[in-house]
Length: 219
Ligand SMILES: N[C@@H](CCC(=O)N[C@@H](CS)C(=O)NCC(=O)O)C(=O)O
Image (cartoon, rainbow, N blue to C red; front, side, top):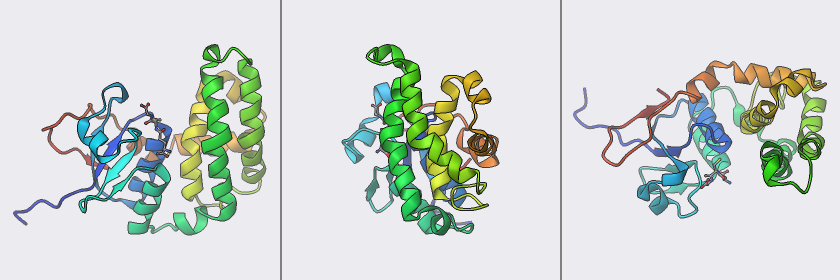
């Protein structure tokens, strides 16, 4: 047994953040171990802000000191280490990148307003929901009616990148979602929601504090 401890990359993460979830999904899929530091967004650790002044999660700090502060870049970095199931080849095509852009742009915009409609009284919750459906759910439904996942019958990067946001969308009004006509997208959502990968990614960790012992993720 070596007397030294390998130095792990540090992942600043927040359990419910969809960007952090997509990063953790890729780290789990690649089976890349990191030292997870669960962050409380209202009390961000100074070490995280020193690594990335933007102050958003997730942040991955490599042993070399390099910092990766965008969730998609963390996904690509993780899968670049190990990608036995071909998530990058299957799930990072130009068409899928366009869907991810829509997810992070117009869909996220509408989702936040649908979720917190009382803060955006200029339009009704239903109007924001209609926007979200038009920009992302409808295109997803078209693709997922043809194939089980976005890049074919097996999952890939784009599925894992987009799913955490659809998960939030579905949870805003679960009864509406369950009765909605987006059957292929609901099936895809349910497969991801009940996957072993998601169960691992949603493991609960206490907030990190300086000096705490290392929490290895995936656990
Ligand atoms: N473009 C970033 C966005 C990350 C992001 O906005 N994360 C949210 C949490 S879901 C955040 O950290 N917000 C800062 C805050 O709430 O203070 C990425 O892809 O990683």
